Length: 427
Image (cartoon, rainbow, N blue to C red; front, side, top):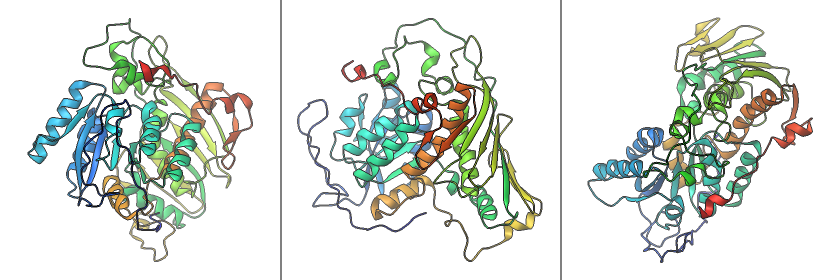
């Protein structure tokens, strides 16, 4: 990773009015495109719920070469809380707050945006931000295979920096595990076992429709997703992750972490499997529409087989000469011979351990070098989980061509994308 690219920045941003027709904005000195560059990268934050506020925002606040200048959330109370956190941190009252992201994206004094919304908004918001001339830091995963490819193409078109909010490649444990496997410490890789959580407490009973809270812009929360009447649990993070219209379930959520290390260890981070089959159980009489119990088998072109089970977080690589793995999240490195983790490789077959994803993003915004978790990396990783969900939905084994990004089945190919609701724009 971190391949060199031209260090000069040629992109300029020319947005002068908001997307909804307000008066021109006063332009502040900016890091890019202005005659009086700032020493700090200006950031706008879209989605400031628990993860957006307590993880992404607070980590960026620790970095001295960036400044949070605006926040946005469909919940007005969240926006107010995030503004208070920022203003307290800087000892000012300067942070701007919005409930409509279009107003934030129209500001020309923002260099980059940080997107921490529900999954169904990740790509649509990223596309709008890129078109507005911003670099983008966005949480994982994508919602569909087609969305992921569209995102990759748009990042390239705008010569932008896009960083996925996923820390695994910056975690020394997972980096070292992938390194020993890629460098042959367990011999030829034969199979991979991936364990993901089984969250039986994440089953949500069906609810009657309820009045939308005054605090919430529900139309913007739904966005491109099909319209359904509001009910209280639907917008809760544990619930919406289990609903197909907004997410890919536990497989897409936790799988983005553990399966990424599996792909990297198998030299498959830029391609993917060629076959998938699986079965899953969707809780009955619930808001849930994604399996919370599942068993999947992926086969790669090099004959490596990856089994994914909802039996608790773990990863284990099996090779011709031994094995290596980690039990639990951030658990202990284990192997047939623990000494393999002390091995140093002069010509290691993996990139050097990068900084955390927030620091990496800021560095690459300034240098224009390739960052650790690019749009292509997000797309390839998300695709693995989408393949599993499509196989479970259709109840059949599917062959997949990672180069053409197509199935051997017409019905499966139709599930690479979804019909989007468009009337949210005027709602």
